[in-house]
Image (cartoon, rainbow, N blue to C red):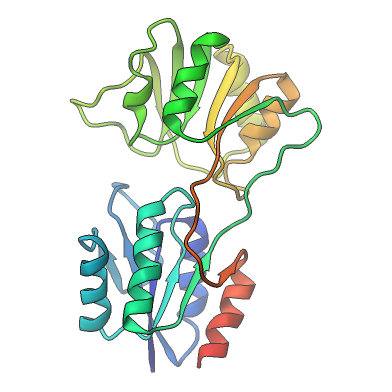
Length: 246
């Protein structure tokens, strides 16, 4: 029996955990950071909370007798990915990164690509008046000083009562989102600019399509660099990797 730890928090990780649990020779543990209040729990064995950095993850891998490690975290969860790569090497266990493909600019897209959320906030005053902000609740403070801009902020969970947030409206909702829904939001709130991280995947891509159709600018935050190591971009390839480890 092999014990697999999946660093989760994405829809892909949930699907992967469900399918991996069907392999009789594998016991699956999913780790969730705990930032979302009502997460989608993929398997019976779930661990919540951080590890305490690289050293904490190394200790957990050893104490829990983990045989295999898959990083299926969000593409912007950079620190845990680097910690995972180093910890797996320290413990000498097979390690795989599941990284869904990034969105690519296509004809009709009006993208401004930036390196960080902070840079995204700095360029908005040059052209934006009404912004659809879809970066999650952790980095809203970067936009809080932009008093000349109205923000529609879509979040899974509301921000903390004492959090710094920009002026505008908070909409709590969880994807996947239909294209008609995204069109309706952009039109109803007279959005001229969309701010998004390049998360990839299908669950939230409809907002990019809607922006393209309606001529809305997109400020796209590029992904952080990933650590070296073996990478796959779909669940099927991940399952094949797992089978190869048995």
